[in-house]
Amino acid sequence: MTVPLKAMETDIAATMRGIGQRARAAARVLALAPTTKKNDALDAMAKAIRTHARNILAANAEDVAEAERAGATAALLDRLTLTEARIEAMAAGLEAVRALPDPVGSVTECWTRPNGMTIERVRVPLGVIGVIYESRPNVTADAGALCLKSGNAVILRGGSDSFRSSVAIHAALAEGLNTAGLPEDAIQFVPTRDRAAVGLMLAGLDGHLDVIVPRGGKGLVARVQAEARVPVFAHLDGNCHVYVDKAADLAMAKAILFNAKMRRTGVCGAAETLLVDRAVAATHLQPLVAMLLEAGCEVRGDADTQRADARVKAASEEDWNTEFLDAIIAAKVVDGVDEAIAHIGRHGSHHTDAIVTADQNAAEKFLAEVDSAIVLHNASTQFADGGEFGFGAEIGIATGRMHARGPVGLEQLCTFKYRVRGTGQTRP
Image (cartoon, rainbow, N blue to C red; front, top):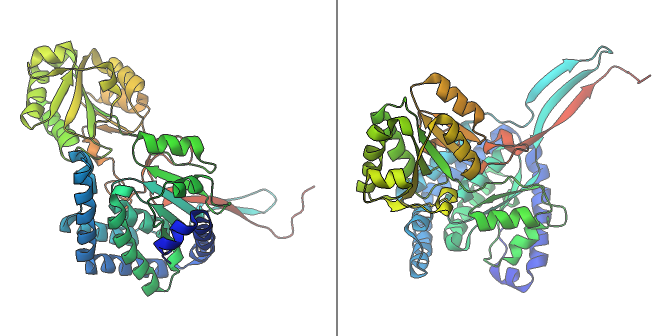
């Protein structure tokens, strides 16, 4: 059910309470919904996305035009812009989630006690999830699909810059829910840009919100973590690193680094810092840096990197801590894998970091000691994506340590309960 914008403007607090109440009621229905019905809804949602692609593109064009007038960066425009291919990818993502096993009701452990009681640990939905996100309108579909399949109701609060796009996508999702006979309130979109709605969600909507997932920049995530009165799956900035070890094959290192930085510079899995082992700086550093520069990437480096190529700008201390989300990278020479790990520990955001090496011992040390949600050996950091992990989609990359870490997919959107079966046992 979509609340009229005029009603929102009249009394945001009352309207948000109503959204929370309806979400809780829908969550009770979804928790018991059979897999076949949820899958029917996902099929219908994918069909509706394709059917209404022209409307979605038209709404997105208005968002992009407004962002351009406001002076948005190229990186933000890339995250915001939808194309026919990206809309098809959205629909395909819904179908990918449909094809995944339903986690609800699955028994993860089962054992029998000496007294004959049988205990099962069973996955159950979290309940009502609030997703607060910026820029990327595809999150509307990804989050809606994952929450639906995992039996959760979701309240979506999209960014102001992608407002029209998200409204159009949500309309297609609601159509799919209605076609399958599931409550439209299972996936609700907050139809206002007023930031007061965010504050009300952070307060928990009178106990109707069970968890919040923020997806956006440092400012958004910091506000959510500071103000939220419900649990948060923190999706922090992606200050991701590629470390090129002394045993790295140069051709492989170039391919991985180029993809990690330049495939899409505005995604959270884009590499933001290049670290090169001093033992191969003479042979590897200049070719790696030159490759990026010639592709239009600005390189900000330490003294060693500046000596390798005169086009390199001097890196500031803040550059090592920055998620550029643009064609900019910081580069530094380090004394081996230990210094690389130490640098990542000081400056990284615990998101995604990679090592390129043929030395298995160095790789295992890196994988064991780098404290990030995702660590890779000989692969691009841009694989930090729920779809690439086989999760169908993701609701975010959690960088905290509680409950969920890394891509948040279906299983991570469930909690559990214990089912105990007895035959009349009493405790002595």
